[in-house]
Image (tube, rainbow over all chains, first blue to last red; front, side, top):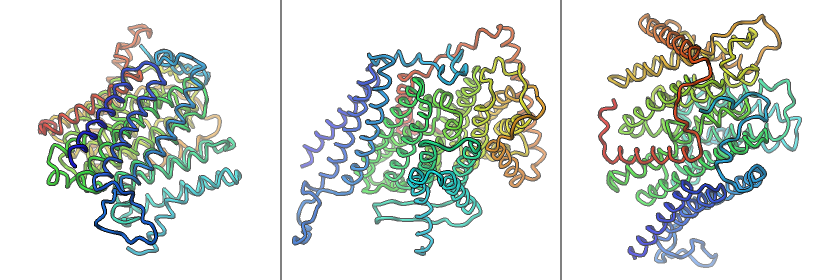
Length: 133
Length: 497
């Protein structure tokens, strides 16, 4: 029982690492966001895996059936926690994608280097001027 | 505990959220509701500071939400209410339109929840709510730069929260609990190595959220380029969302303190160095925030009051920075500042520099009392640097009073003065002398630097490395994470204290 869990844990950590490397190394903003989502999904998978350690049966009781302590229920706590995190992750991803569609008007290729050079000319003050060497 | 007080505390937490969602339905009520939410936060902050409580609130069983209304949360809750009140007062003459009041109230509620949460999952939710709200506030102006800054902020914030969740998962796997206190039980249950790993994951996330050291490199540009009233909120209270849990952890696990002292002092020096080389007013204030949050995490006993003193002063300074027309510090002395703006600016700047009898002086006093050895020498250096940073803002010619009084900054300056007088009416002679010496050394340093700047013709600046590209921010987080892991696993931190 323990062996497959170890293997799956290792795979989850590998996915997390792959996401982190993508975030660091990709120059395209859209791919950076995807890499962030890979990291998020890896952590979701870890919580699901965590819940499955005590068993695989869905922790929902049907009305006529009394709880049977013998049965191998999945742990509902990590599932409940990660449900919240999934919702939050989804909304953040949506917000970031909206920003990206607007940033694509500045550089359709979404290369991060072209956004680093943006300066605050919009507010009419000499904001960014001379602040970068 | 009694049911009545728990019902009151829950409604205290929920009311700003309820108000936030009522405001779009009844726009005429938006301002009174926001005002009420801020006053409620101030009220509870004062009650907790006065020694009422502590109350602890457990919802949905032992694995559910645990909230702690105690002395640690008190200065942060108070700061939250005061800064939101000041931002409201500052914009009193303009109509309160659009999503701004809603976001303001959600931010207030999210931050208050982050300050009282003592289980990791509630803290996660609260910090994500704060992060999304702060992001939406940054987009008050929809320029290309604002979009980019907002995207960076949310991207970095969400990435570290994923790392945080990984730590939470490991903690639950070993202890079956999400409580802060479970972190202390990790060593006997799962060994010191697991505890070091979990702590490193949680700390790197909280340090990034709080804007400390190289993991906080996102901060200067974000706070420098956001609209003035949003910068005031960000530098005043939003960073505190990471600071308060850090102080709670530091109090719970004393073995973390040498580590936090080392990172905090490094952050203080880094921020001061870049602030001294800065030519833009808002960016100077933002770099100074990076340095001051480093000082907050030095000592859990004084950190809350220090965060309060700094947050009040910095929020006022950012609100004023939105009013003074000149952002370029090279031209700072060529035009005069009307008296109504100069007074709050002086009080705020002097408080952060540590001049008696302001609140900042009292907080700095407590901080230097808690440190000894080489750490106190570094702290002194950071204080002199900070005094030099703010000496630059003070040197501006004065114009006769004109225009209206800026209510928000004036209120914050009054609180700084009143709080200082209340806490330390008669400071000891030794500490007065020390404060005077630090201020004089800072002023001297600023004069030297000014001569240097003039000799260079104003064209060349100190050539510090540019550290604020998106890849630098992510790299900074990786560096801090790796260093935390190495130091926690190695355990060799005796040199820092």
